[in-house]
Amino acid sequence: MNLLVLGGSPSHRGGVEAFCRRATEAVSGATGHQAKWLSTESAYLSLWRLPAFLRAVLQFYRAPRESYDVVWLQYVNMPDLLFVPVARAMGKKIIVTPHLGPNWVSTRNRFLRSLSLQLLRLCDRVAYLSETQLSELTFLHSIPKSRIRTLLPRALLQPSTPALKSNGATDRIRLMHAGRLSHAKGTFRFVDVCKILAENGVSFDAEIIGPCDSATKDALVKYIDDAKLFSLISVVDALPEDKLADHLGSADFLVHLSQLDSFPLIVLESLAAGTFPICIDLPGASAITQEYCGAVVSADRATENTAALILKSELADIRQATKETRKKVQSDYSWNTCVALLEDCVNSLKYEKRCTLETA
Image 1 (cartoon, rainbow, N blue to C red):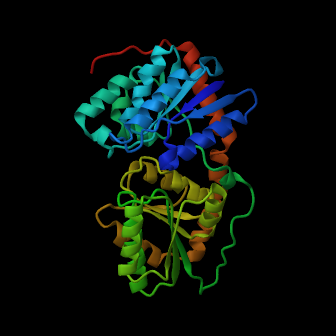
Image 2: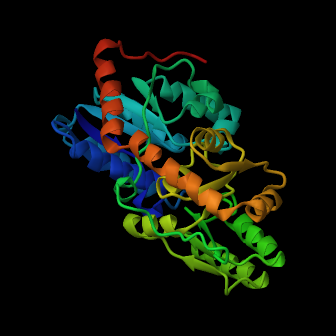
Image 3: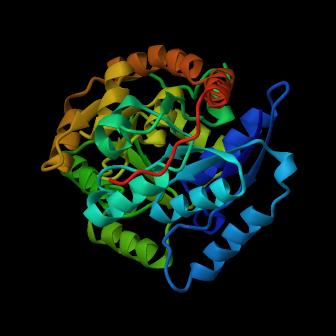
């Protein structure tokens, strides 16, 4: 298969951009397959960013069409779907993979949801990453679908031994929060969890790793300082994947109290690194922790419940559970498995008639 991977905004790097890069590398590394990545520049679309988005549309339209057979679009917000009719006009088959959840504006707003559905009905197939997406994004029910798997960093799929975690009774607990930093992603709730642990005399070290804008960074630093936790919490800019894998592997708990993520990739990454995730009880996170290991907490008392879980946990038991889970996650999400599922999805297009536009 020859794919054009379409999606992401390199000016706002995050999980989707990493997914596009890994997908391109995984497909291109498989025998007989090729892939190229073009960005959509649709993140945080505004009048100021509109020219970059329009240039991305034009670049897609002008890309050599003979170099690929199928367009694989990563759907993060409604503007991404404008590439679907363009691909259709170019005579190309197009697969769409959603990376959004029910709390996105384009899925909560009735008009935007209806418009999104009309555009999606022009695609050939939806390739979804988890069963929970189907229960959250119910407007996808009328479109042909295939299940694929997300792609984990290559560094987390190596059989090497994870970072050593001794089982001494005096161990300091190591906590981590990673991803694009924001209120909605749970970054500030992580600080609240650390504050409760400190007030209870827990010995710990904590890291916050990821990109954010300068206003968020300033607010976060002040929040940590006001909580008198500056000596316990380090804030680190986005790291290369291999470095992030090392940091994940040395942590005991990943605290990911995001209220947005439909299927949080960082949770799977933590499990592949041998780290125990604690998340807000959303369908995707709940499904991951039930299949492998980890815990979910209710959104209304997320920080208190997370701190309580950590306080009552036996560190030796947590480390043993994640050690056993690590190999299963690595096997389930090997790049060979991911590419094979994607290939099945692409091959299914040969036996289907193209979707037609319908009225809602």
